Length: 552
Image (cartoon, rainbow, N blue to C red):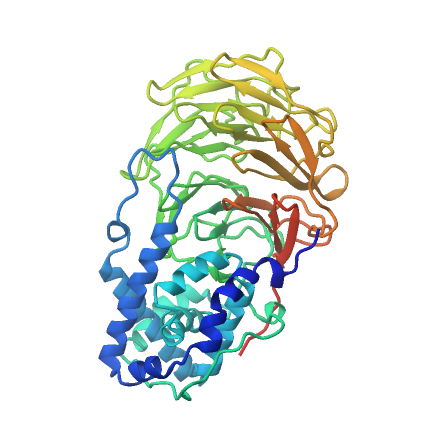
């Protein structure tokens, strides 16, 4: 069933804003902002930004297995950093005016406000944010809309010969302390009207270039994608942050980002995305980086005692450590490493009783152990594995009795009590799936009735109740998929009528309500398009399609 953007994403927020947009008289708010001098304006912007940062931190995902409680926002991003963030944006606004003659006016601000209202993919959250500003249109425009437009428009007009972040770091001092506030000339009693049709296709949301073999994490507010292989077969170290609340992209900083690579792995810690490993043309990378979306800053991971560089490895987050294991490199060892981001230190995992050498396997975290299974090693397709306990630094082999057939390039998720595996190579013998119970070291089969066709390079997510697979390759590039319900042991095909075009090697994240799919190879090229899938309604919304051009 197809649900238009207007109906699926806009309905609630349009209703919520109907009173605001058609009965709000901005005379008092306009007067308030027009009376400010430059110093007062800057102070008000800083206060507003603190409200926004507190709101975003409240919604930022704190993994359930983290060993420490979620800290205060001020422990992660200080008030001083927020002040610096505002001053940096004001310097960008000055640069936009002096370099390009662009001074954001009321029309531009309200046009973007209306676009966000119409196309927001998290309308309830957007409504919640706007309530923080008492639904004051002028304050929302100045504090929430203006900073985004300034950054987007300045970056859009930047010479692409040098990455924007590098250029700005070298030149930003030219415009610092040069900002002068000029109140917008606004007609009193003006109303903001939501257009009858959305402007989705005319707005350049600065999506990253199309790619495959990249990584993605969900932060609770944004999907962050990074790395991979572009359509010129070049490895990249660029990335982007997709915010469904505003339906916009923002680039990740490239200063101090890890070297370009394909097939890295990534985890989300609650405050940072950590990427590590992968392949860079001729180098098996043992470098990595920690990306903080709150500050847009990369920090390199230590090389001291780091494992050898690998590709096709596994990587999990335990709540306080990142554990990597296995993978392919010239040495083909079965070593692993534990990385503690709080101390930026590595320690090796035990080799005693460790599984045999392998790559393209899977790993899940149970809350106490990392379970590794499958992959390719001395034989092409393995169906054995091991359970690693970091508290004792010890391995225990897991049973292969009644285990699924050996495979690689499959998917595995932890359901809360069992490890679910499905798909992979070889096709079609790796079609079936299985459930592993670590409590009694046993396997059980899962239903194959209505299950998707065999495939590799597909996306998968665990929703808490269902395992969703989509896309991939089995000789043909696919846009089919299925939902496996653990309680009923049953498969239901995903809707294909409004699904995105076929693609393989895309990535997917679960937001808590939707699966977001992005990137991959869509038969003709590596794409920078995406879509959202709502499993409850079995509905696709293909809205992450990006066109070039300036929306001014």
